[in-house]
Image (cartoon, rainbow, N blue to C red; front, side, top):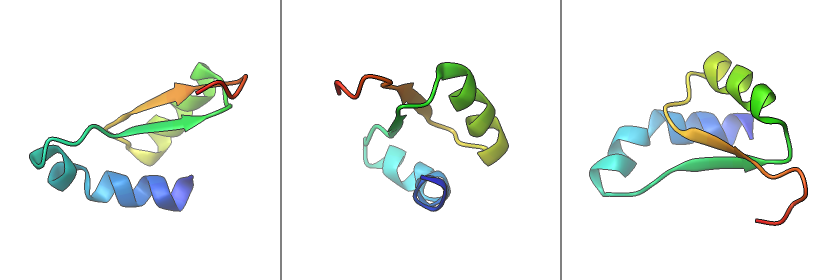
Length: 54
């Protein structure tokens, strides 16, 4: 997700201008997501789906 997430981060304003909602999704924990989000400077939320139900 890193390269893909960075691309969405870099284009986030353009997506938002078009009314798109951006979320990241993985099996990792919420704590892991928060650390990753901070490290990567993601302006969008990351969703935890440990049971892969989404």
